[in-house]
Amino acid sequence: MGFVSEVLGWFSNDIAIDLGTATTLVYVRGKGIVLNEPSVVAVEKKTEKALAFGTEAKKMLGRTPGNITAIRPMKEGVIADFEMAERMLRYFINKALNRSMFVRPRIIIGVPSRITQVEQRAVRDSAELAGAHEVYLIEEPVAAAIGAGLPITEPSGNMVVDIGGGTTDIAVISLGGIVYSESVKVAGDRMDDAITNYIKKKYNLLIGEHMAEHIKLDIGSAYPFEEKKTLMIKGRDLISGIPRTLVVDDAEIREALQEPIGTIVNAIKVALENTPPELAGDIIDRGIVLTGGGSMLKGLDTRLREETNLPIITVDDPLTSVVLGVGKILDNLDLLRKVTVMSQYSSNR
Image: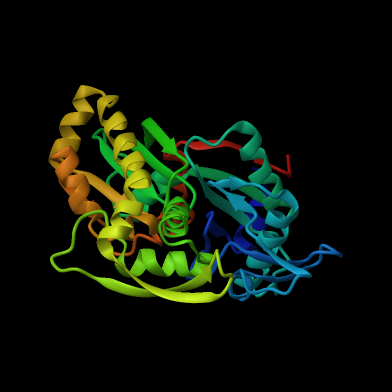
């Protein structure tokens, strides 16, 4: 890096981004997390004009008139709609920096561990078009481990399970790199879908995205509660077409969530089976660290403890561990050199 870009680097506001399927978080060096908004864009159908982003756009999900549609540009951890992802990123970057900056920032973005070269390029190009001077990508489980305060640069094994909105990333990390990773496209969104489908099948009731998420957060669980919990839900009757309310209980929702939770549990078991024996010994001592918004499902830690017979460690704020980890890397560029960052590419070469 030449002297000029070194100087530009000092003036730029470096930012860290956790570009998630459900939520995007932005961390600005020296300021901490400045933005935490849903990864949603509201678009006018005819003109394809973006009307709102983030929180404002999410409020419109499922409530928009015919001419407005709410799009989620990220699907299962990767960019599904390139143009909208770029517009959304630009909006979030401008909002995070209050765009008084005349210099383009250096950006580090957390991405799923099994992301393909094509998907990496899409994320990088989006960030550059949105105004980045340099772009680095780092695997989310590594970032989550740093954010959770694990000693990842030491020669010992740490296992991280990062359950997001679109993907569950499982990684065994040692000496700053991923020794083994497993990624399944089953996470928070798939849990919501499972609840929606279950209620549709059992009660002929159609519920919206917001309602499905509300049910999951309120009475969803991976392990039975001590006492029964119920919730009144609202939706549209598929036979009469009329709005209807009914009461569901936690046992039904647990049944609905069996498949997605089973998939996540199996992926963790596969990862454990594929871990080198020396590192497996470390994991028996240290346990598995759970992070990501999807890990907040009630009783998931208990269920995993029973299935694996290993200690399960939950972090204080699972939603922010990836972005805090990426932020720590921004604050400590030595760490950036140590952790295996995916082949960097910068536009100023």
